[in-house]
Length: 508
Image (cartoon, rainbow, N blue to C red; front, side, top):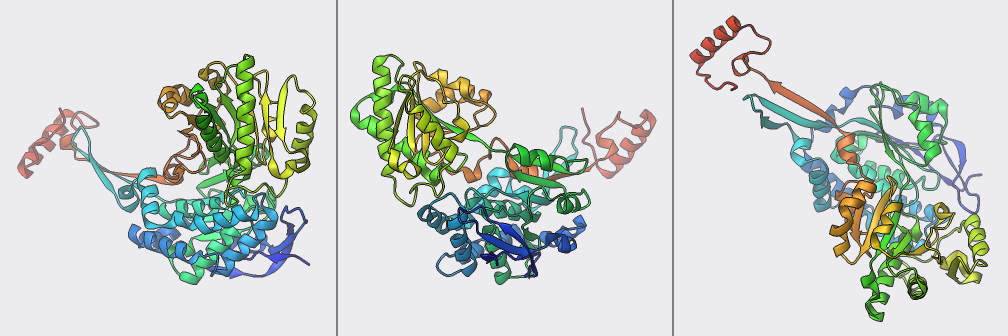
């Protein structure tokens, strides 16, 4: 017996032919049952790009209106699909129930008209999404460019449910045909969105071009049938090294891979934080928000914190004081922001317990009896990151004292997503160097997970621009481009003919 059901939602149809049983990665070992995707491959894939034509029979305003209605219908108190997704996530997600509730209540706001228009304009340009945009070239010809949607497979992450809403938004504004492979730790969120779209209008082009399915990641029997250029132009994949390497084997001419690989985020705090006690407390509260939001599950959550306190005895004392204020501030975060993870990494706990005895090298600030909920702050007395930095999660951060703010830059790389900075003046001071070193997003301290990133490039990528195909239309008149492929006598004849028609403009 399974604990819950996950239907296959294919192009406006809900398929409940349940056959395959999978685990949802919850601590209780819960399972769910779902239809066999292999049995319905022909309904999952869009075999011809010509089928996207109906997406171009509606206007951008129609898309905005449909998404607005969808956002209204994703109501946690009224929508049974959305409520079911939330309740399932309370078991399988590492986010606490109070944080999850806040996410499910607020994520639909991403579909409000102003938000949709802002994303579309900033990420692609509404004019390009709506029609052909003309540009006059130097030689007098006119070029028209349009962004055309693609057939895409999205392999989404399950760490935060907002990923599903973001995926739907991207697909809708780009007029793409979308297959979503749901993650095992969140198999119902995207499913709930698709079923709600069917309730609104099963024949709407956005509904008819969305498929949501679950299969075990790495199932070559299914993926080899889907990941073919005859079915797809794009694969947008979230995942770690192993999963990206696996999906990359399907890349070939005609099939593009957009990698949303895991990122880490860093906090950089200048000496101004130690101006007085009140300032230090305020900075600690800001850093706690960046560290604790989403239980530190998001890529934008702070994990390593550099503070320009100095590394002498006085500087280490400041670092330890800051660590204590940071730990206290994390415990005081509102429960809708952070209440402690559902599951705490056992390997991380073992590492923390081991270094707790190495007081010459580290100062560990935690509640040993409740570490799984409180998390910990590890102050590196010698100014080096802990060896297990890749394990930092569950509200555990590593505070590193430095003598000069630019020392932090040597830790930046292509995986550095968000950098929270204090004071704000550090943003303009460091952003060029930080960007060159790999930093992708610099924000004010306290806003690492809430600085309006939806309309900004994601992980150093303009994802929506990569999702579309750029079509070009150019009308040429030989009279306007002489000396090219035509012989001089031909040009002369064309020019004479053009004069008779009143065409006089030509290239210089």
